[in-house]
Length: 535
Image 1 (cartoon, rainbow, N blue to C red):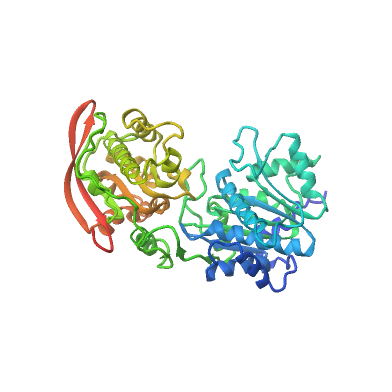
Image 2: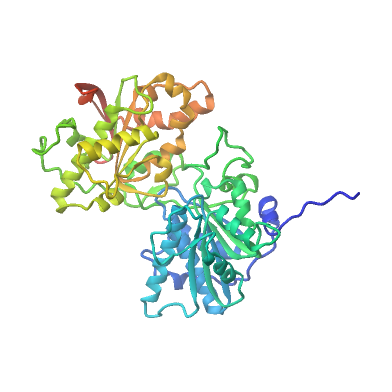
């Protein structure tokens, strides 16, 4: 009996195993007029590297965009998608675009940016596109719909899902943009095929954002939904968080067990376009990742950005709650002229929750809110938690402790709830001020999760969420811990040297009060910082 040959699907097979052998895709000639058309609606013109990526997506079957934190990755993706729309609207052809990521938030971020550009074009002198445009996001029945009502909400098992599939498959002129995780789009394709194959020739262009979090197998599932001449854009940063696995593993040199972004870089030697201009953070916050993670190719576009905070008090506010400790040192910690502050201490008994750190974080958050209210006449809770501040901590028990203190002791509302979360939920977001509580202060417990809590990728994301100021609370148990695994030790040095070497400009010892099991206590802390222009 002849051996059965495995079935291969193109272009998915070649994209995975031989992307450099792919034949030319769509026929594009001069794409400069497309960029000039898109430039009319950009808030700021693309920089040189962003322009390079724009043009490459038309001429290369697969393009990689390396976007370190704050470099405008989502903005350039949206502008590139608008460029593709401009081309197809001008030629009168149909266009189908897929938007993927490991989570709905990242997908919605891209769709929202595309919609902003479409709205700007619609209100311009040129008016809107003459061809019909449909923008939808596919979700599971149990997931939340998109917040933007301009994005069509399609639950996968709903009757609307078949209508969306029919629109994608139709030869009718017009533009259809569909966002979804690989699971939901794959199941949609299976539903449309009687033989239950998760493949379909749907998309002319596939854009995967946060590709450093997308597993190789998940990307392969997306590739099964491409037309034979489709183009692919993978945008990510392998120096930030990678995919989440249910087991511990190390990055593979071949990339097969890491993210699709690293796989294409390392296995197939596809050179990414690296964005270098950081539009988010000041020079103090960006200085450490610049040297440690990005080989000095990471420049702060607004180097002197400072926290817009007027500290016009010098003692405890008269309405300070009795349930939270007070120290005049809080005013020093929040000083806008010190953009990076580290508080370290020598306690050694905390594991998944830490009342000392929780109380200090809650107190700093409340003080910041009170000072902002004096300065801006009541900052709304929505603006405060979505723009002004974020609290990052690795363990859910600590998240609960901080939230409870903010609501029960500090009197903050639960509508919206305080944004206290893990760094995984923060990737892709930014705030003026980030407070980071590292929680663990037990040397034995550190050993049980050293690769997790001392991960340089997690630290890089945590630090670079801050636009203007970053405050870290961390124990000596973490800073002085020496992992037995040399790889973990090398990774841990990124965090440990940040606190002990980079943040060495301010060096002082302070005693901060807190409540331990209802009793008043103090913790001796070392106050460190890093600044360029004086503190």
